[in-house]
Image (cartoon, rainbow, N blue to C red):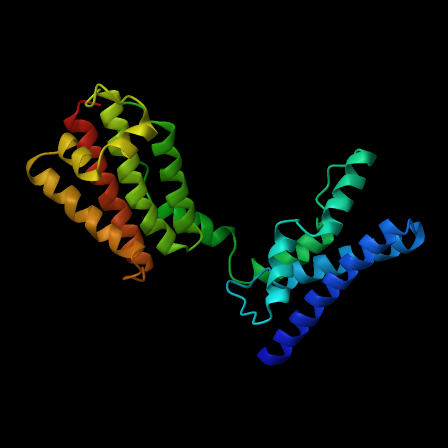
Length: 257
């Protein structure tokens, strides 16, 4: 299907969903149970089809403001029919999502959108390339979680995300050191610490000399991605993760942690 035809089809389906939403409300107002059941079934079927079509879409160009509003409300479960369905499910004691796919549908979608380009082989091979952070004492849950997220992003070939999260990992590690070593006695909360003190204050508090220069240089390079000045390759993501771990490990060692 051409892009123009696909766009028109998407617009038509969205407008039809809005029409079905109005039909559901009308059936409720008129207490027409038979039409309510028919309209809700058609609404759920079309809603699922729309979300399935958009499953692999990153940016959808929608010029019609009504269509754009319908799509946004659909994803927020904020159309009137969504609220009615949720109320019915609640009264019936159900907890299913109104657009939940069954096992057969999920398998087919996974086959078409995921396994066509990725498998457990790529995932394990990628994780095999990345080492863990090696320290002599435990780190905060924030630090540990970010290391896991970076490795997962790398394994799933999300190299920009892995690269950007390295900056967050540095920030979390520096905060962790400041809190555990009580470097700012008036600020002992991990999150508040970063809100009340500038990055420069924290960096200078935990590092001196060549290590401080390396930390500043690495942080500046990592920040370049956040300003949309860089597209990251697999090798760059792997190399910067290794460099990030090395700098962080040196910081923890410097503070006897």
